[in-house]
Length: 492
Ligand SMILES: [Zn+2]
Image (cartoon, rainbow, N blue to C red; front, side, top):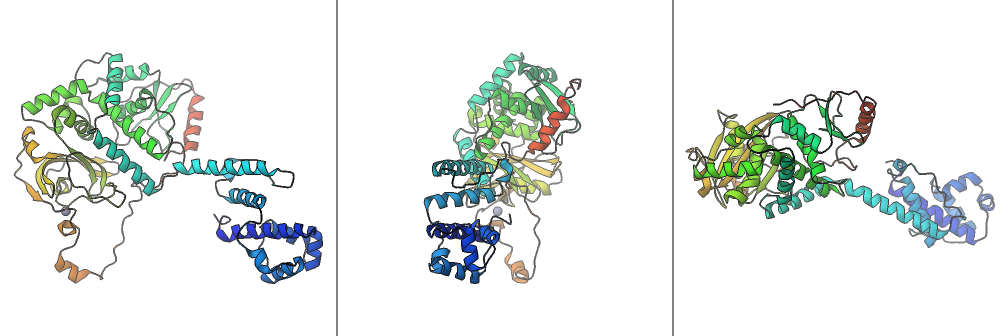
């Protein structure tokens, strides 16, 4: 933004002070220009803050106006009117102004001061609203921390989302077991939509809903996502009556709720809770069984277990999604597991302890099977079960853990593997071994692979991260083809 810089703002104030002084002396622009030996147009540019005058010319101007140079250079506006004109000019020079597409307003003498005040206030409010959505990484982290605090307070169980999911299931006559394909089609119809699989869905989206033609567009080959999950998540926004998100925190909350809704349909509470209770009674709880019985991904099964474990089984839990470097992407706990956190309290982006199951599983010979271990931590011993899943963005470990005494409810609850973690104490695994540190400290310059995708600032817009131009041109392209064939999402 070359135009929007501090010196430019000073030029605007300087110009206004110059004009103010000239008018006070009852001089026309032409008269003053003549007196100081410069062109009228040049003086006009200076008064409008568009040209920086040479210091020598400033001296001459101050002299011609009979004021000390300091008077022209003072940083405050000469009057309330001038302050408003400067504020308006500042808005006009802001990079976001051009995006508003407004007709120009020249604050000439015919524009009343109260009108000017009104316009400036509108601009300031517009920009304030605009900036609410421009989530900086820090704002995004804080919103996430707040959301996790609320999830923890209700043991990650959302009664109103469960109720909405139960209502939807009742509407399509669901009774028991895994959700059949025809139930998904029925749900889409229940909410008044048709499904359309297309090859040209914009890259920034997972699905697009056309609310005019009541269509849901899906990619032909969803990248790493269960197509049913994407459909149900989309329906979740309608079932839960989500409106355009108010701010970034609202956007995050809606996303979590829509995910929850999708998982609650694929693994319905009325079927999953009795299933889990029976497994607990038989001391054979297992994420794989939940996954297989309900025909969902391991992550959906683990997510659902986390929703239901405390409410229905009386077991506190933690859930982590980490990549092969140990970086945490998602985390939840109500069992006191000591996660690493940054100064904002954010867990995402932090490295998980090297001794945690989520790290050890990557070194396991059977990484795609299920890895279990006991981990001693400063807050107690935990039993964790971890599983690696490949994805478009690389391999991720999904880990579910419970306090040690609850291990007995799980199948294969004694893996014979026991690790000890002292994290977050730096001596646990953050500080390099002393011998190596003595040898290499100061002798290396590693270049980090940027984690810029991780909670990075999302572009502003009602739906952060979505390119609205792509979405609208996509909708336009497809709306013109009423014969677009209605299709079913493929079963996995
Ligand atoms: Zn550690």
